[in-house]
Image (tube, rainbow, N blue to C red; front, side, top):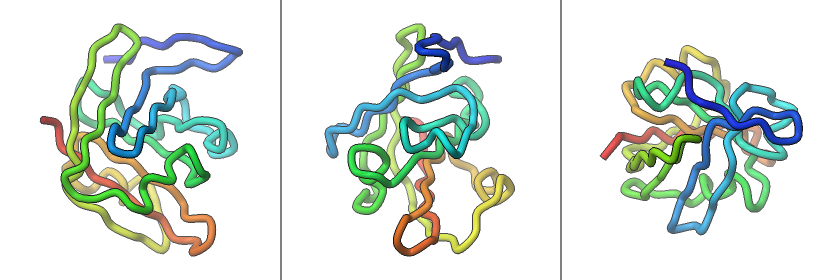
Length: 131
């Protein structure tokens, strides 16, 4: 099932991601574009409805910089464009020197968030389960 999208300024957004502990609320672009992740997180793959959503973002301040200090147990909310809200909890966090679609999809997680760390050049991947 495709996720409904809302077009704004030529971009299709599929939802909003919120991480309450870090006071982060960001729109999620519906299509992957590594050049646009400095503006907003982008869907890399999947959707909310079959628990396959993977979202990539920038580690710039005010974006996915929370990943540097996130902890197991942190709450993550994703709201789709119909107003449906999905609640997740961080289950585990891993670092990788290189990243690929296979790595991001190989774990059984309901939601995956990832970013490339600007200064260390590795990747932080956060795996979440639906609650």
